[in-house]
Length: 155
Image (tube, rainbow, N blue to C red; front, side, top):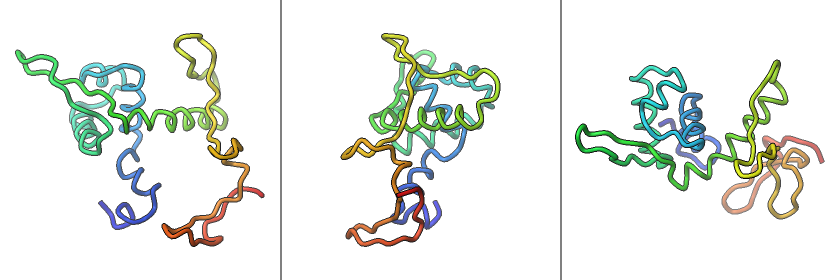
């Protein structure tokens, strides 16, 4: 892992664990209930060697847990850990961004499985309920110090 991925930036540390498209698509599919190697392979059209590496990396990163479901022949399934479930809203927001800015033609969307109501994911500040995009954002260090470096957004 690069020095940046071990530093104080949580974005870099997070992306080091799920920062490629295959890994995120595997997590998406796990969130929709897929658990077995062959299910991921056929749904994603991913090469077996790439899938093996990504499943191992996601397991080592603590996003998936490998569980044995058959002894003869030995077969494992991959289920989301709490960290993996906590990543699902991030994927839904990425999907909403993709739909809004790159959704030419028909696109799928997420719904509440119980009601069928379409979900409209948005990231908000927990304290104020304001959309994150409405803030001017700056980075602060662990001690609360910070500045304008990297500031983005609007006032």
